[in-house]
Length: 164
Image (cartoon, rainbow, N blue to C red):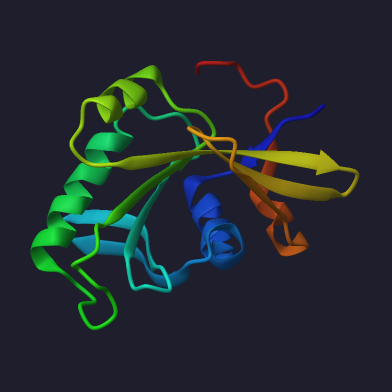
């Protein structure tokens, strides 16, 4: 079976942004939001107005916990979108990647903040694709069909060298 990925992290972001509601039941708030010199990939809110920060990685990355920690500190300090966000609720931190490095799990285990890790994969079925999202800590999974408008964003990873 051929494995698939997005061409770029921006392509992954475009797809997640368009599918926030079916994947997470979230309302989009901002993309590429700049705060104190940092750029948050996606900010969203729950129905209860809880702020959700989604950091996306198209490849494995060792430093996603530290990155989300910096976003958390800046968002907690500045409190943007205060008319839409209930800052009395905890800021929820989510990382989405195809795989997570062992260091991510170690960093998260000994951290004060809570982080949720989701691994994504893309399955091909003929001329159709499904984006699958699995919580790295539970059996929770969700999937959506990839709209044909996103098919040009996908590439086969067959023949890619592992670990490069």
